[in-house]
Length: 126
Image 1 (tube, helix red, strand yellow):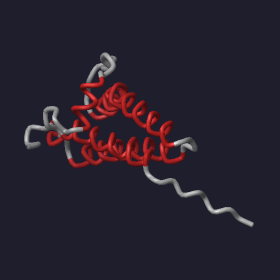
Image 2 (cartoon, one colour; image 1 turned 120 degrees about the vertical axis):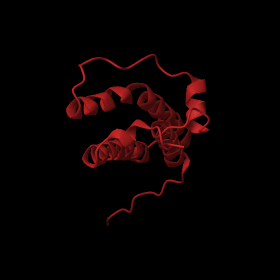
Image 3 (cartoon, one colour; image 1 turned 180 degrees about the vertical axis):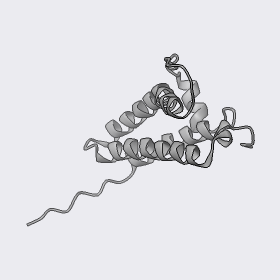
Image 4 (cartoon, helix red, strand yellow; image 1 turned 90 degrees about the horizontal axis):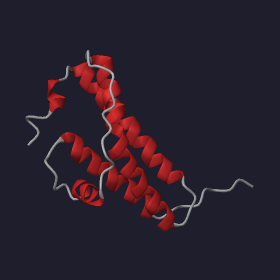
């Protein structure tokens, strides 16, 4: 399924860096939604907005990483904002299969789960 994915053209160190960057972005996004002190509906809308922003803007972050490891010109790679259909295809894993698209789908579901999940009130010290 992923044999043609560009990830497999990277060296082990380059791939590890890309995975570390992806994990850091995922953790930051999930942590942000988890820390949001708001009603469930607001957290859910914030999760969807954050997912939309990530899908739209993260290509520039990843391109900056590729600039560090390859000799590629400085340029903007951000395109038009994704529409609802594109986001739905990512969340349902029905877009063309790639590690990037499936990772985006997993991020979306992580954010949704964090937003609608039961919040446990922090323990109060006496």
